[in-house]
Image 1 (cartoon, rainbow, N blue to C red):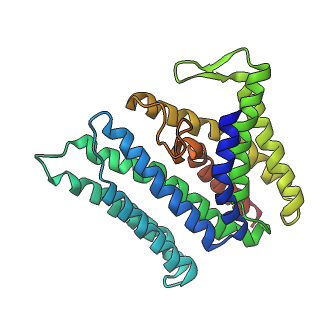
Image 2: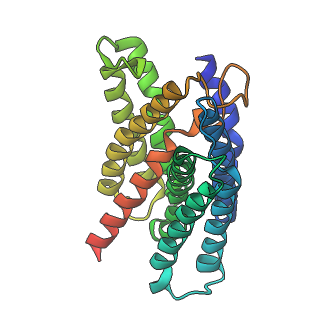
Amino acid sequence: MRTRIISGCIIAPFLLLVVLGGPFIKAAVFAITIMGMYEFFRGFRHIGIYPSFPVAVGSVIVLYALNIAVSSLQLFPERLTMYLYFMWLFLSVLASMLYLFQLEKRSPADGMATVTGIVYIAFFAYHAVLADDLFTELLGASPVWMILLSAFGTDIFAYFGGYFLGKHKLCPTISPKKTIEGSLCGTLASVILCTLFGALFMNDGKLLACAMTGLAAGIFSQFGDLTASVFKRKMGIKDYGNLIPGHGGIMDRFDSVLFTAPMVFYILVIFHASSI
């Protein structure tokens, strides 16, 4: 309980940035990405793997510069946008591989860990920016709210559902405290929260899209949490960081968002494409 309250205090400033919207959301996601990758790479160092933080930071800077060039400055035709992102991914992987050219100091695992951090944290989190850029005007409210509602709503209600109702373990070897009953409560809460948000704030309600988004995001939110736990177990660490002593770091608070943001974005893409 105390951990959830303290986590809420940490998340509150980021929610203020979401309220302000637009460039403030970009700034929030950018900051979370940089801090999250630092913690993630530090975890790898515990097991003798040394990914390149400078390469990862450079990749993130290029990604957000590309976003500004495309969405704000409109320097490139819209039809080129997808190919520019492919180019960014290619250059990020290339830079990670060139990092291995220090043959006497680096191992293949160092390069692969660098790529993993860029894709898993930077690229996955960036979907929140894409969702805000592409769908806020169309929906009448920022879909970032659905990302946060599903991620944190699932976590909170899964905790209480497991606490009061939990009897059957979900993944005992990965996270011994999680239960099937808690998982179902968290997923149901995500559906309800996203549907209510759509009914209250989005154009024309769009209740079906919101309900489906809440269902998928609630499930994938838990995949994100469990994936982060797998990494921590393999790294031999309890928490990714010490932003608040005893309560972990940015990655411990936002791990579920990394899976939720892409899922929300792609479901909205599918529903939008099917309505055209």
